[in-house]
Image 1 (cartoon, rainbow, N blue to C red):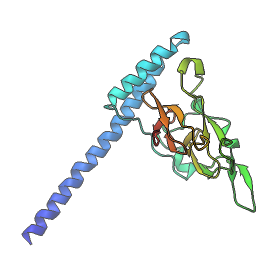
Image 2: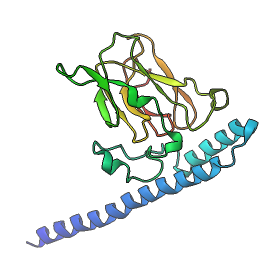
Image 3: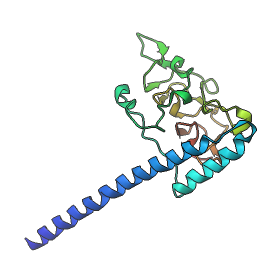
Image 4: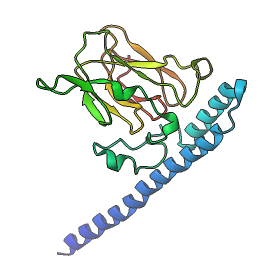
Length: 213
């Protein structure tokens, strides 16, 4: 009986300790993202790239070298819009073209535009002919951000998810089955994702994870 009470006490203490840890991690994510947004307000004209690099390094250091991971957009769009900044709600960082992405709605409906759906199975397409989605952030010319790619090509017939503002969140890469895809990760480095890898992107179009080549 005494052993059962001790075990229950240990379990309760573990729950108490884990809850503040999770809350602390969320607070750190929010704090580091807020610092990132403040840092990015210093961007002006030709000085864009040095400021961008400095902000990326500062956020990476703030997070202890880990990725900034916004909450995954839920299926219910009405819930999604209540999430905090950095999770893909910022209209200034929206992708206005993605609502027109073609999705497989089934045999009777055929292919229809995605609209405001947070996820869909992309319309079937042969290798190399998947749909393209923008990876560029708010008003950022490709020449200044120096991404390895300004778009990502997503394979047809596979599930893709989207942030509330239309930016791609996750999809299966369409790299023609044999050619790997070079993309920019959350720390600003270029990584090579394997053929047909499932990639997840942050709300600013950088790769959070993929099967590396």
